[in-house]
Image 1 (cartoon, rainbow, N blue to C red):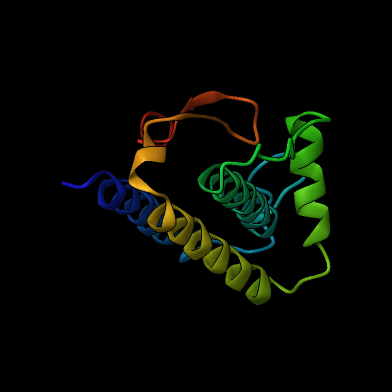
Image 2 (image 1 turned 135 degrees about the vertical axis):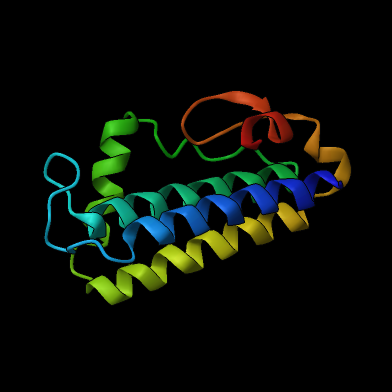
Amino acid sequence: MEEKTHLIQQLDEARQKMWAEIADIDTQMEIYPGWTIKEVLAHIAGWDDAASSSLRAHAGGEEPAALAVRGIDFYNAQSVETRQALSYDHTIEEWKLAREQFKAAINEMPPDKLGEPLVFPWGCVSEIVHSLS
């Protein structure tokens, strides 16, 4: 199976599992200290956005922005805070859109760039294929 197809399949499978978990969840229930499912989804959308930006920069031969330069916890809090005013339904839409953009960034990646190391926004340096699989 082509590497890009495999990566996207893994992302889709993870998303399907997440959908199954959140389908019947009480949206007001705290599921992580201080976070409801809305904040968790905002958090995931933020990291999908960050990963998309890094992949696109890498594809263009540019140095990816250091989005978590102040630390992962700061980035997590900022990512959730920027989406705090959104409704739950709007947060779901952001979560969906961010994942589609992430998959598009993978699809747009030139094949020769897949095996090159890149700096991910969370500070890890690795090849795309090994990091995302």
